[in-house]
Length: 72
Image (cartoon, rainbow, N blue to C red; front, side, top):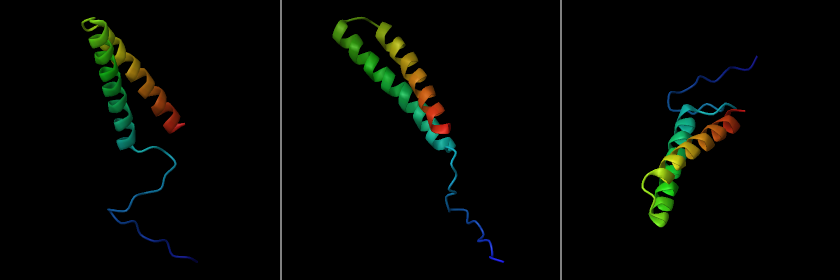
């Protein structure tokens, strides 16, 4: 009977599910990217916070979709 190798604390597990770190990074990156794009559009169009707010919500929505695809 083959012996099972013990897990070490520093060793990464190879799961098919996404790790919490990658999910947190996707959410944060989506919000920051939406904020940056919205601020850029606001700067070009001289609209105060309108596009930035829309960009944050759009970035969050896209990030949630990316998390869904990652964990699917």
